[in-house]
Length: 117
Image (cartoon, rainbow, N blue to C red; front, side):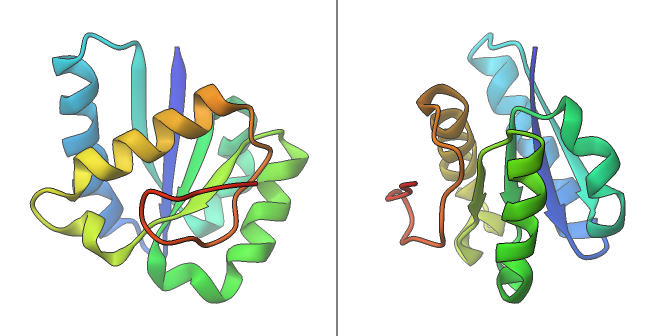
């Protein structure tokens, strides 16, 4: 089973996004779980993760989060602010799915839908 982690400061907005993304995985019959995690718990959770999505408000520390994810061999991407809106979960889910299946080691901040490593 693949695990997608969503990290944000306190975890409130990522909890709602994770819930919507879990519903998408279920509707697609995919063995994927999505979990919200605080920035402070991230290092202990990365070893079991398949992909890391980083909340847009953490852009200033994105490089250090990517470095932590790289140590655990987990691809990472910075989320666009729009993913926290009503239809953004689909975009976030597809981004994470692409990371899992691409083999990209990490991604730098890119416009929505255009990650690359």
